[in-house]
Length: 142
Image (cartoon, rainbow, N blue to C red; front, side, top):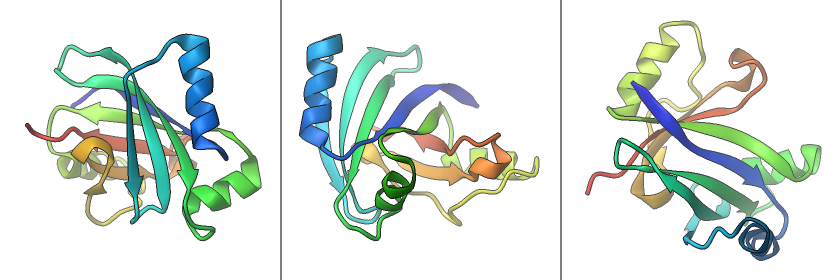
């Protein structure tokens, strides 16, 4: 079952400047930096609040580390801005994706991949989600 908005992903050209904007403008201070080589991005997760299921809601700022990454291509086409929305699940992300796929929505990965903060993730095709790239997130188990 989907339990929360896990994060909203925002693509940016300058990660440090964008983090500084969110710190200075909104006061977000709990920041986690990570590089995801597989996806070709460097990211910052800015914690917004805790949620009832023991997880949290975040803003994810992402910038490409390679010109061939999907985020680099997206930035070249669209410029900076909201890239995707991610919903958290309280169960297995593959089971959640399979249930959604059974309703006719294309899942972009055959198997979940490594996501931020040790999570497991998959994406849903934006053309099947009213133009919104949608990520499903299973938080890391402690």
